[in-house]
Image (cartoon, rainbow over all chains, first blue to last red; front, side):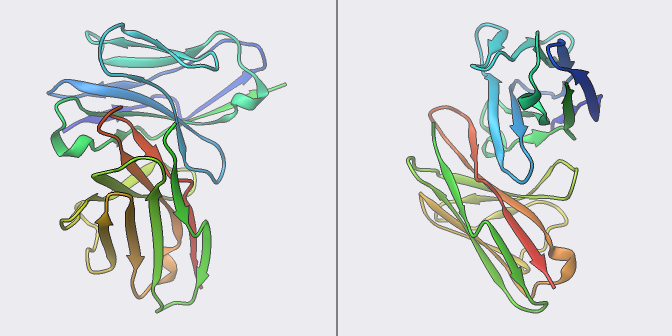
Length: 116
Length: 115
């Protein structure tokens, strides 16, 4: 079984400041890692994912995350945030082997609030 | 990207009635779909895994007779909340797994309010 810990439930930042949302996971098997974003009253949208290869993955809107196997982390970063980045961010893992039908285990989420 | 739709987007029903929520993968076939429940300001709680042509696998603590799941085709899964009660009021979200991208694509969610 896997577990995901998002250490910060809320992260307030000012516009154009850098931000890091932390995610640590626990698993006895290899995993795939995901970051999803949720805007109010909407479903989840995939921000980025790590399946294999380069440990640094990027999204089209400036976010990046780095898979660190030794620290079992997958922190999300953005060098300069916008007001529109205000949302709930969820880190998730699934078994890389396809166990449990690639069922996702979610962290509790981090509310990013970008203030002007 | 792949699109998953849910219908209805919101529904209000009276206590004791049943409500059906549809989840469709619009541009890909999904052998596996998932149903989640989300309470305000909380994470998603997986309710069940739905596999096309077979019975759904429910998570511990989820009543299978209350939350009926049918995955009759590779593009459609349905969740029926039977004999709904006010405590069933929640945001229900489905997702469909793509065997090509290993991603889950999420629907926009259905807000259920039971009065």
